[in-house]
Image 1 (cartoon, rainbow, N blue to C red):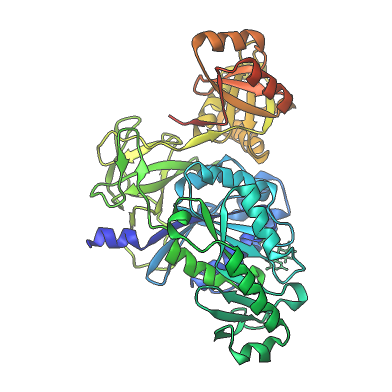
Image 2: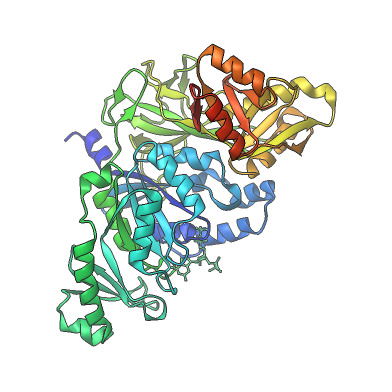
Length: 524
Ligand code: G4P
């Protein structure tokens, strides 16, 4: 294997998906701690708790400090390089959360053992499903009075449509939670919240008398449970996992560090190294000699003194080196990237380089757009970086009507960056903004004011979701005539149906069976 191949093979790029409060922040912190990337527990949570105390977006940004540093967390673990991509949740849930999932090779899904599968998990999983992203499941909070494990697995299978293959199995729960049994290593790890790594002892073998010594009567229950589980559950099948059809399941308690190491080991051992990526003309292999990558997120620096933006590029092929000249394919311009940000957390001696699977941040002044491809010259265009149907809508109204031009320009540019989406209904002069998280509106208002000198107020707009329309010219004209106030053009001049509610949407779909109503639109 060449050095390039070796470097790529040891990379694992993943994100954590979960519903708010399932334990994503806690787990992130523990993963970083087990990976040796942070010395002290508490730092990630501290960031979050201050963050959580306010919904004011400027405050959020200030408290986050240089927020790019938390967007990608890279650390070495067991001869591997882990790239953990942050998926903002809570107040800062946005389209970025979805799009980050297009830049990873796998995901870890955290389920709260008390609440089971929750709404945001379903949404995020649907995004993963678009690329059949392999998912490892971590069922968290076993130290609480949880739902029965078998019931949780049933729920995952029925609501998320994936087979579950338990890798570990919990021994009791809540007050009687004693640890987990590893179904493949035939090992029992005893839970001890006071032990530094959550585990007091690990023993081999279900028949080990030490098991009875430590957990008494629960030992016999465990033996019966495991026999049932082995009979009734799916065996782990790597191919099924890698194609997104089966999820290996681990149980634990993140806050007590318990089960976290097994999870991190699973990321290294089970999840895929950087995968090939589809481009319009061909598939790009990670170990190609030449560099290529695409922009999945743009983050603006909100400090008015520094109007720069960071474009987050997922490296898809080859190797990046600081100072390299790369081509922005959409403009055909070469850029010498001397100030790229790489994310290696600890090792200050590393040269500034990145390999397929890694993320680099490219500072720019608004010239780089979401979905842009960078290459060493080839006219590549990566696919699979979509806009997602918004669920929140606002009508933008100017305080000073003379600033209409600036407003339109600002909204257009912010839409290209992915800050929010812009819709112009065919039969009105309204400018409608769409977002998947309401914080996106605050971002837009703030940036319009500070970067474009435009003051706006938001009004409510009666719409619950949007669908991009694909069909013949005649059909599109017919639906536009019928629902002109609710058919709009988006920032890329594509037809969109703005549905007041699900019933209207269903009716429109029934009335125009030849039109496709799409929940996502590829960014070109
Ligand atoms: P999130 O990022 O997914 O929103 O979740 P976060 O990690 O913030 O966890 C949400 C709450 O769940 C936190 O409690 C956290 O301490 C708790 N938690 C995480 N893992 C476990 C676990 O294994 N067992 C139990 N019992 N609780 C867990 P909080 O009260 O909101 O915050 P804090 O006061 O504990 O800091």
